[in-house]
Image 1: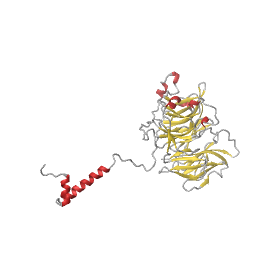
Image 2: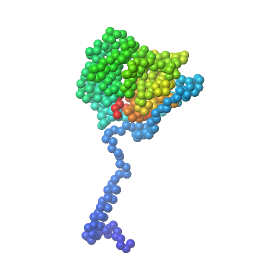
Image 3: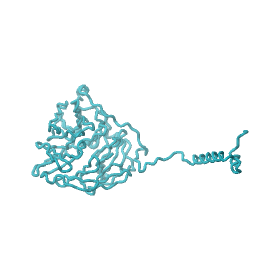
Image 4: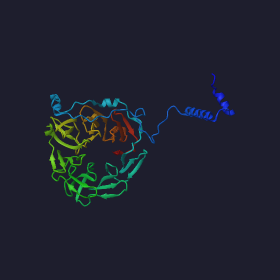
Length: 424
């Protein structure tokens, strides 16, 4: 066509110096750009700066985290069928369904940054580069502070505080003249802890002691309830004002401004509770989940959720339990308040182990034999210590569960180690 030159003609003109300097510069830039585009791969691989946890297809599995569970109204509770007026109807993932589902990944996934695990008394934290860092050489049974900077542990009859940044230890109770156990952090009151204590010559028995509290600087040591010992662990409220605990199997609340008051299950509509303990507060502080024993006429264990605003309560996952010493460990609330993870010590082996139940009572999932369920800070994951078949000769392992799909992934954790805390 008239007035146009082919690429070859243009290049010849440039080589002969016939084109203007501006034309030559524009054409040279255009050709360089074409060459660069041709050399770029079709897809660029993203860089994450470290290992990426794998799921079924080595890609994140989309899911919708459970919303905050709706609380049944007293009218809804009363309108249930007469033969099912206390236990909520659940959609359950049975043991056979769990076994027929996808098995855990064979290649273990790396531990998440923020996970803290214990191995033979030492503490390790997974750093932002996905590598473990030694926190402490010796902190048996340590409880980690919410910010991950301090640890509580017991040595003999005393409670010890360990600064994980400086490695400095201090005995908090050496001058109290009492015996101690079961120390816990109080997130609603930073710098204060709760625990059980006994007189030096007191009878320990199968209990967790008399409810007590103190500051981590060793000050304000207070025995909050000197009358009756507890069977299970107490639970401090998120707002820092109340402690839920049991007095020899009955429910009580200790309030900072008014002291101890009883919590009667019958006042919430539960008439068959014969023993209660192991409380756990919901993240919003509105509800308390307890482990209860009911008799109707057989003895059964269940979770009971008490709504402190509506004075209503309902039972979840009743089961017949095997005999055990002491009371049951408290259930663990998911960060959004929609799920409870707990360990059922059921008579039937196929129902014994870790369960997750919706707090509204409409869904539950059996994860498998194991203990110590722990939620991720964002509520997307749940990890627990899985127990293999004793005949297999294998060691317990750490499993990671994806909330929503309930798909299970092995975690690459040293033999004998267990995850005890998960920081944001």
